[in-house]
Image 1 (cartoon, one colour):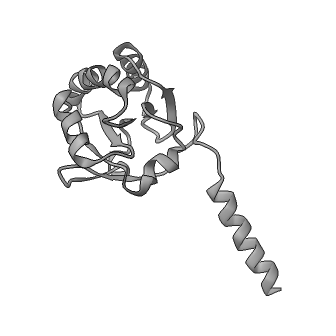
Image 2 (tube, one colour; image 1 turned 180 degrees about the vertical axis):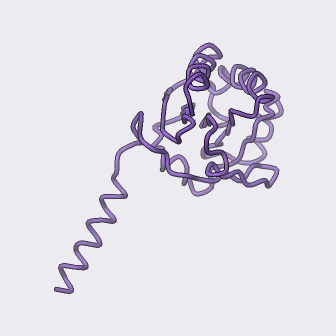
Length: 164
């Protein structure tokens, strides 16, 4: 009986470890990001808001392509307080990441993905990747590869137009 219980626990652990990526329409588990400045941002504190999560790295050339568009979108929505942007730096070094942030003038919160916990949760395949979470905490949009201002604002505007 003890062996059966042990095997059950192993099976449950493996099932969680090999769960697929978060699908469109699924609830996104709450997570937290410690920014390069030391602030802790908890997505649970932003319930009822739209959250844009962008995975990037300083060594990623396509990430450079989208950096200005992400910042421009952030500046557009920042005053309303209804949208949170989070930059998640993936497999990088802090000096290079900070240089990237400065080079592209990124003002939205950015922080390292310590022990790749956030990227594992989203099951990212590379960088850049952008995920937009609706006000109900469900995944609404996924973009693998560089995104554009029109793409981001189009999705956000649709989500903001929906009742919370």
